[in-house]
Image 1 (cartoon, rainbow, N blue to C red):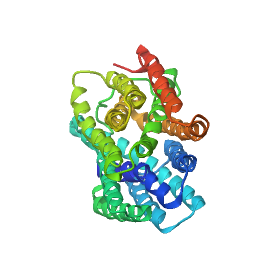
Image 2 (tube, helix red, strand yellow):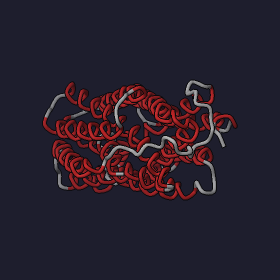
Image 3 (cartoon, rainbow, N blue to C red):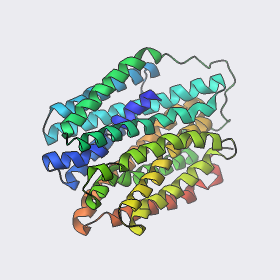
Image 4 (cartoon, rainbow, N blue to C red):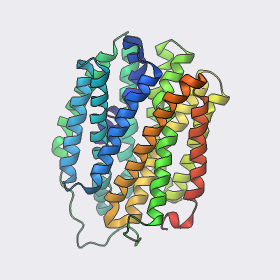
Length: 372
């Protein structure tokens, strides 16, 4: 949980609440912010693809990833140059993908062996907890009129300190060799049509959520200038993400991973469109609540589905799905960077994101998409 808080809450998503501060300090445009976000997502894609065939112990990959995230976050506050920022955001993206993939494989295996699979919700709540912490820190910084460099330095120090604390706790996973597999007897061919469908739908999820996930605070800032008000968009997003996975893990006792995944796509689509229907800050906060409350639930359901469907090949399928997710994320900010200057607003991008999520539901409904 703590590793995911650092990797995703800081390594991936701290940029979102800091972006308005960087715009204020350095005059970054929405397009430049989009390219910085894209650099992180390209790194995330590279990290996920490399994880497919990496021959490395999960504990080592997790430790190295966390250390790289801490150093690159700290460096964001020490260096002042767009090109350097691009490199640092890409580096953090690579390390974040390693941590997510290897923590998912490592933690879900241990929980299954211990007969405590229901605790997966607590593991993935770490992402929302990290986002809440990063968003809260930025909210305090904005209220104190601190600079974006101060926020980066603070989060970098926190990342390194937390990494040092959890370093001895990340140990080699006990081997399940010789024990009955708790997953279904699904085909192990990760190149099958079924697995490709799972990968595609997870990629659509990456594209659909990333536009509000990247630009919600910026959209809020366009409506309300007071940071004590618009700065709450990201902490609300993170809090919803942290709480939702715990409830979803309990809900899974009654419904399948597929049903949770389907519901998550539909609720997220509604959340994305709410700012277009409900004007002002209430619409932004409702979007933060609904999108934040579903994106980690979908992540958890997707990773659980990969482990259940692919069995011994789960890590490869998880990495392939994460790669597709990263590719979808790359397309999202690029489209925003192209559409916002030409249309003068976020509306077309939000409609496109919501539409793709709704369409993906029909693919997930196919019976062969999962194994009951």
